[in-house]
Image 1: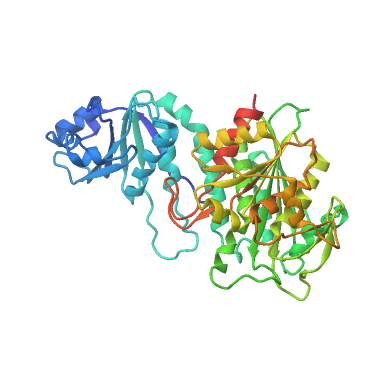
Image 2: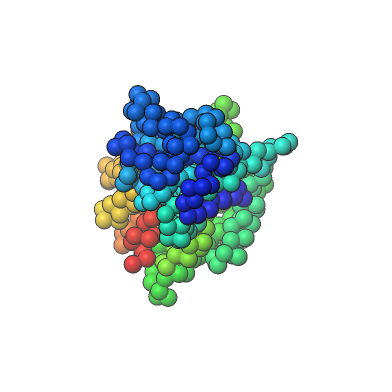
Length: 489
């Protein structure tokens, strides 16, 4: 697993600034006031910091943006990175400030002069998130990041605040690694093994094999994977950190390790990106890892359906009818509408076995959600206004874009089948909504439920403020915040 960069916190040492190697970072507000460390840095630089502060170049910087002063006189450092940051920024802004520094690090050591800044822990957290780089399959010499030290007025207090954030960063990295892995490495067997290894963190992990799934009646899930050499599985991860009799929150993830589309095969161009079709399961795994690392005081169960959707002589066909674990029959209109069939059985199983207090499912489910919301927001569908509001609040607090979409009986007619109870695709019209409406059929009325269509945010074509181009780990922070705010009391 990719390990987040090690960040240490130390008391401000003015004498150490002159001899620090690598890069020095300083945070300045538009009011022009310098704290003791910035004043020392300015004196060593012969007033260059104050001159930059008064310049048009600084005034053009937006909050959390940085500018670099190269090879400054009077210092051993190769560069001074000046970040514009208010005295009391929002957490997301402070994290973006840290991320701006991580983009500049390279192999250099970094010394951050954070002083008494109240968001020092968030700055470090943003640095850690943006410093991610997946290098497992590169050969040759690899550039290792330098050491990162944050000088602050109260290092022990800041380190204590940063502790849970380090757990969250590891959870995000675990998700990003899973989404980055190619399908010949991250098979269903390998995925399950990686999740089973989290037992050493205190999670209870159970792997349901195909024979188990057949006995349970998960025919919809099994139908998706029947054309693959990789066996279909459901992995159940339990974190029991709350009261013994408290019903758990259930997190359910779509884990299609590769999606060809099956017999309804996808176009060749861009198909290589379908290694990310297990993104929902990746997020569930990252959240469960985070909860275990920070010893969350809540009961949470994570369930992921792991399959591979391949064309083969045994693969399901358009026109097939399968019976779900619930008992409803499904007409397969399009074998590329496979994720909802996986989720249907796992949703029903989660309710049948665990009677959860609430459920959240995540899936890279539809291209339609990208057409509607682009890569800035996940689509949010829910049967419970209060639960949905809590999630949207958590996502907003963590800077993870989420937008509520509609559900309603009017969409049911689009997925009504003439020969079965329901069909798995209603065509292009309202594609993300009909997919959610399909899933809604497998949610009991008394269960608060949220469906997150993360097709546009799980992996992005351009870098985001806190992640390089590629997998983002979107959802780990929001769901961890939801657990903390709603289920940890």
